[in-house]
Amino acid sequence: MIHHPTIVFNGSSHPQLAESICDYLKMPPGKVRIGRFPDGEKIIKLESDVRGRDCFVVQSTCNPVDEHLVELLIFLDCLRRASASRITAVVPYFGYARQDRKDEGRVPITAKLVANLITTAGADRLLTMDLHAHQLQGFFDIPVDNLTAEPVIVRYLKARTFENLTVVAPDIGNMKMASRYATALGAELAIIHKRRLSGAEVACEEVIGEVKGRNIVMVDDMITTAGTLCGAAELLKKRGAGTIVAGATHGVLAGPAADRLRSAPLDEVIVTDTVPMNASCRGLVNLKILSVAELLGEAVRRIHMNQSVSNMFNGKE
Image 1 (tube, rainbow, N blue to C red):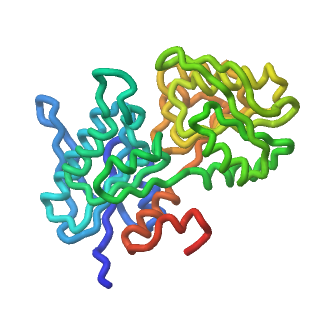
Image 2: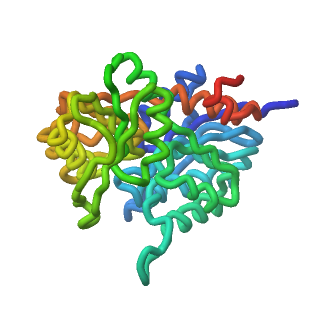
């Protein structure tokens, strides 16, 4: 079987991650010029020949979300019109994922809208990481590889050699994820019951499970304003917990997140580099950033070689 040469392009949302992926693949990134017209419209000019090539575009749809999303769409259209053989949108952080259903009248389902836009723009498949809801894969009419950062975070936590460890799900929606972490770490499992007051505020009301005198690892798919996380940490401390470590794939850390994390009883906060670090959080002494570049790079290699991506997570080749 003939494999068309791979080429990886980096958008402007997170060039450091794209360069690290290329370093893992031992190849230079594709050459591209990204600029603007005088009126602010974005223009993309490919400076590498992509005709007949297997192309990957690395672009997290993080803040500013709309700008990075439009840039991704223009990039995909540019590659399609330049006769690329196959186009994969590598979106480590998939924005608009929260709006995946109509939970009240007269609201959009923007997760489905964005899925349609990416497909229409020219993507043949999507490579992403820890979607906010797994059912979002069904919004796409193209293949979706939804990776998880769990192996990266679990490896780091195992090196810490915690004793009397309990993994805590900060809400019911993260129960399955917490259960997988508990199994991998040989830990007990607990869950926090919370009540959402608004889009940025929650009330953590009770802990289901034993946490007194135990070290805690809380896991989530993302930390945005850190309201859920910090409220849960305070409740756990009141219930007699020892060391409290929080881990999440996407460190969005928007709005009041930095101030909340500074004052919360958290010994360490672990995130990955799916999004660039918010400038307001760079001084946080308890913040640890792990890289998922090798994980994404290996997935890119396997997609190009038409090999199984899921086997990366079950110990098979």
